[in-house]
Amino acid sequence: MMTRLFLALFMLATAFAVLPTHAALAQEAATAEATSEAAPAADADALPAAIQFDASKIVGHAKPWQLNFQEARTPVMEQLTWLHNLLLWIITVITIIVLVVLVYVCIRFRAKRNPVPNKFTHNAVVEVLWTVIPILILVGVAIPSLRVHYQYVDNETIINNPDMTLKIVGNQWYWHYEYPDEGIAYDSNIKKDEELAEGEPRLLSVDNPIVVPVNKVVRLQITGADVIHNWAMPAFGVKQDAIPGKLNQGWFKADKVGIYYGQCSELCGKFHGFMPIQVHVVTEEEYKEWLAWAKVKLAA
Image (cartoon, rainbow, N blue to C red):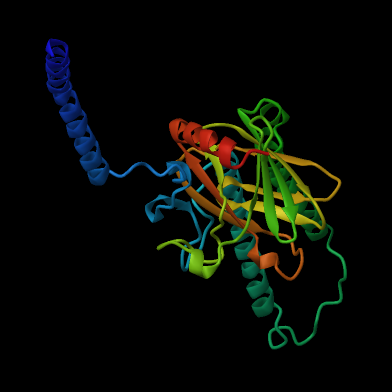
């Protein structure tokens, strides 16, 4: 009898001792449930900031009634713009001089003023001038042109010492991109109209854009899988053919964070106009975040 009473008292004491623990667990569970309702769990499939579209970040894009190039955002494009402006001044001066001479000839040697035309057929001074002057102009144009080409566009020292490499393969009718150093490869197709986010430019937006860090030298290795394509990015000063069986190289170093657009610039078939290019230039931190995401989602 005493034994049973002792056991009953022991079990009762144990139950009271455990009750606070269960109450604490219940309170913790209720708190966790409330927290989860207030702040839902992060989406594991959420896109990294580097490829999220923001209309305010568009930098390389043609504007309505634009009369000049897009804003230069690489050293190559800055030099090409400078060379273009120099040539524009040269041809403007030449055009004005030719126009003045043409007007003078029409007035000075018109039939009313010269009823009896001259019979000469040669003038040594004029022939020497119109031969030597064009030669001097061409030499003057060739010197800065060669400097821009070999010091910037096709600088082998820069191309052979990049911060990263991007391989580009043109296909009918989409682009394939590879990051050889990172083991990442993916296709990039044009977005359909119903897939566009608010503010995304039609016929220029893609499902998988290129992502590169700002102020880094990006070496481009460009080829084609079927026919000749052309990878053109106006703001970067890059316009390189993608030829099957041949590997062309180029480079760029974007100096401003933002979204840039380009297109295939070689007639490659009926969907030639539907091969846009989209490049996101991001900060180093955003690029590393995208790399971590891409190595899971886009691993070769």
